[in-house]
Image 1: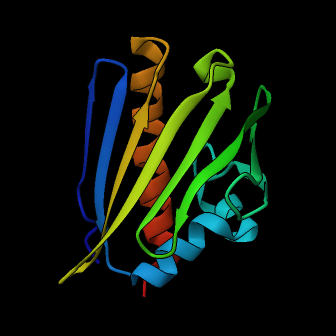
Image 2: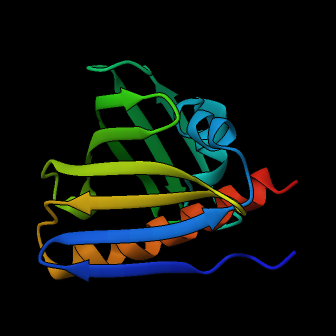
Length: 150
């Protein structure tokens, strides 16, 4: 199976990553809110591991700890919007955001070939943070597609 291309753009403190994944909206939406699934695809590379905790409600917190060779990296935030099979909005705080609160919006659009995910990460503190997160989200969505490949 050929992997779908991912588009990635960074401008003015905002990163937008788009990818169409051959999976249902239900499968993809659930993958973002299930801690076991999240830990499998939101990780730093194919060989590295992550752990995740999720309180999947508006105002609930999440934490993803990515286990890098140089030590664990904590990413955490709070859910602001949860619209089943349509949209997730959450804050995102990590070393890579210089511990500043950034904002991630994930939109789910059903398509003929699966579901298009449009991820917008805003309020980046600098260009390096934007580029790094663009690469990270691109890699994570590729892992998510692999995990859900039918």
